[in-house]
Image 1 (cartoon, rainbow, N blue to C red):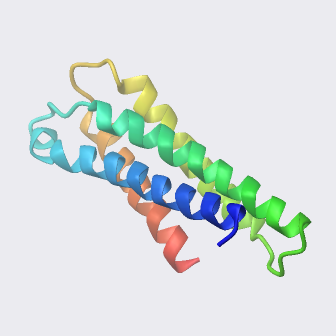
Image 2 (cartoon, rainbow, N blue to C red):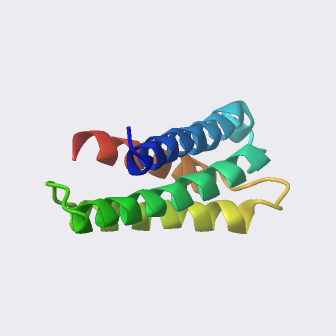
Length: 124
C-alpha cells in the first residue's frame, strides 16, 4: 500500500465517521422531533463538516490519482449532485445549530438529505 492508497483509505474511514456522527445525532433526536423539540446536536455539526470536507478531499485525491495515470474515470455529475446535497445539509445544520428547537420539517430534511446522499453513493 503506497501513501496515496493510505490517504484514500484514511479519508474514507473519516468520511464514514462523519456520516455516523451526522446520522447518529439525527437519530438521537427522533423522539424529540415528534414533540417539535428536536435540536441540532454537536455531533451533527461535526459530522456535517467532516463528511463535507472529506468528500471534497476524496474527489481531489481521485483527480490526483487520474493525473498520475490511474485507469478510472470520475462521474462528475454524481460528485456535483452529492456535493450540492452535502452543502445543503451543512447549511441547514449550521443555520440551526444554536436554536433551542428546530422546526420538524427542517430537521426531517436534514435526516432525509443525509440518507439521500448515502443512497446516491451506493446506487448511482
